[in-house]
Image (tube, rainbow, N blue to C red; front, top):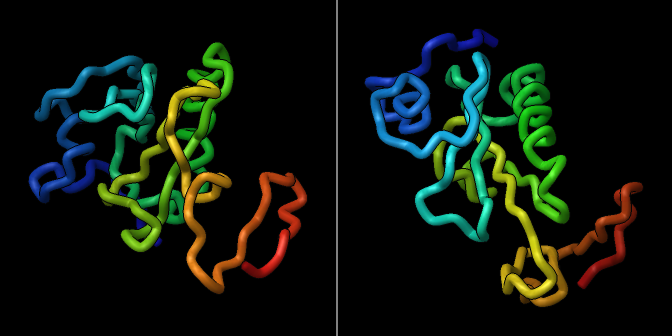
Length: 142
C-alpha cells in the first residue's frame, strides 16, 4: 500500500480541492491533518463532514488516518448530544466521494431522518438485520 500525500487535486477529488483551498466550502474547523466542513445539503442542523487533509480513498485504505479522522469527528461530537457518525467504503455502501469522510449528524427524536437500520426503514426480503448491540449479536433472518 502506498500512502498518497497530496491527492488528486487536479484529478477531480472535490475534497482534495477543498483541502487545498481550490474549491469553496464552509469550514467549521481546520487542523493540520483534518478539516470539518458543512455539506451542501445537511441532513440535520449541525451536520458536518470530517475528512483528512490528504487524499485517502476510504476508511479501509489507511487505518491510522481513519482513526485520527474519527478522533477529530468524536471531538466535535462531544457537545453535540445524540448523533450519528457515519462513513462508507465503496459505492455499493453509498460512498459518493472517493475520499475518506465521516458524517457527524446531530439527532433529535423528532428530526424525521430515517436510516436503513432503523425500524422505520423498509427491509429487503432475505436481508439480515442487526441491532445496535455492542456485541454485534444478530437478531436473525428477515
